Length: 450
Figure 1 (cartoon, rainbow, N blue to C red):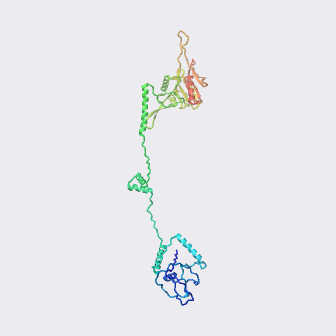
Figure 2 (figure 1 turned 180 degrees about the vertical axis):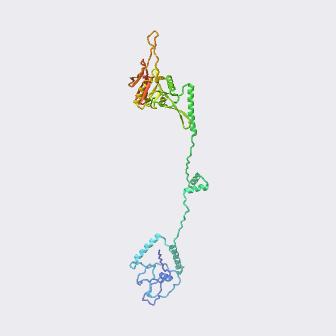
Figure 3 (figure 1 turned 90 degrees about the vertical axis):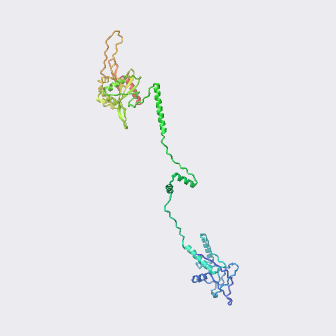
């Protein structure tokens, strides 16, 4: 930035310009700032345009004259080169066409803009006791320092951190150096910030062993009281029976052992145990089963396994048609308590053909289960007579029981020996008489939801 300084020579009194007609008057030379700068720098002073003598001079108010040393009188200058002293140095206009008022307005705007941007360093005003040479030397020194400060920029070194610190790294370093815990570090940080932070640690709850043990003791105690109550009152305890596969709903269940004739005899003996009216007892056999932990237990089998174990001499066409889901049991219906067979078959035609072929020997093959009735004495005779002979018919007859077709084998007195019929095309029923046959059909209808 270019600075312009204005100086006014106040020590020398202003005198009127001598008239050009007075040739005998002494002429004095006025020194200007431009002349001093040219003399000190050794450069020629630029030529100034000649001005008319009659040009108006701007008046400058100056302080009262002070005593000053005697002015230096220099050699006189011809009248033609004389120039009145200006009140202040005016810079040269950039163009000859620019007027004085435009130049002053432009400079004023420039100064106002520079004052907004930066503060001007104004030199110290000259004092009355300071010589001209001292003022020039001080100004020259100030100008050199300002130029040096303007040329040499101040470089600010920005320190480069060795590494970036984060809260996580500082937290870990503090734990390693101070051997502190996470809770103590958080508490110290809360004290430094002046706030209290609540840190909740999730506590691992132990397994409630005592509660589980208490429940087990309660269960065992209740079982013991239940057993003691039945022992004291002599009441039979409820026995949980295993689940036995059956085509009908059973009231009781009984396990049978053996095979062949032995198993047939055990089935007949189980039928001799008296049952309540309308009661159905399902019989079954078991098979041994070994669990993964090595324990051996007996699992109930379906009625098809019991029929196979009986080894009855039935036709092969019937035997091959019987499915494992069959049921064998004992029923009390009317005056009779006899075994029954509910056979699940895979073919109505083959199973019916097999029963027709078995009709000739079924009475003798199942004689242990369906024996002949005892002979009856004649009624209305006063003297002893010969006991009549009762025979069993050799052929079955078709009959209808409760809108159900059946085939019945009777003796000579018309008493039924064995009855069989189909509940549907997949279910074959073999029973002692009509009452047992109808009771089994009703149970099957209830079990099948009919």
